[in-house]
Image (tube, rainbow, N blue to C red; front, side):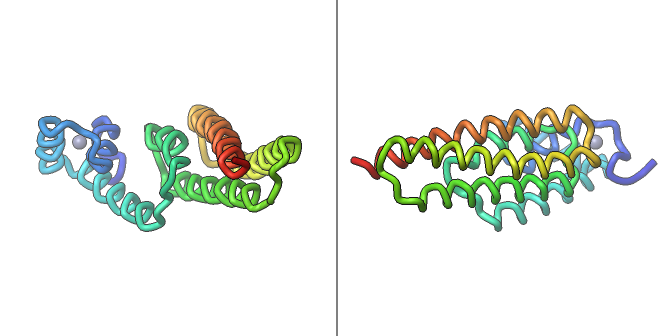
Amino acid sequence: MTGRSGCNCDPEMVFELVERSLPPEQEREVRAHLERCPGCRERYELEAELNARLEALDFSGPRRSVCERVAMALPTRPAKVRLLWVLLAGGLLLVSLAALGLNGTNPAAFVVDASAAFWSSAAILASLVSKVLYAAGPVLLAALLIGALLDLVLLAVLLAVARRTRAV
Ligand SMILES: [Zn+2]
């Protein structure tokens, strides 16, 4: 068998190499392995390309962390799922920007805004999840859901901090 899944190696090492999160010694080992293993080399090239595209999109800011880490930790990350992930991150970002754009300095208005933002995020999520459901297994889905929920919590905290800063 050849192709993406042509070798039985642990893909996690390749992902971590692409994300430059390996200690130098381990990085050398994995690079040496890539020389010998066409399956891993192919996976590496694919991941490096996807990574470069994601970086070009530049989702900077504090919201980047949790969700993306969960997505990156998934054992298999088909391009389709990563694309959905980018859409989800973009959608949540838009929702948070829209909520921040509303000028309400009174605390009651903030609560309403925050819950509105939460529920529109939930609606976006629900439609994304139904699409992912067809393409992904339950484990992947669970990981995405957990990441998205964490993201929503982060979003709520960010909103609260932003409101408070603006009110002062
Ligand atoms: Zn290999």
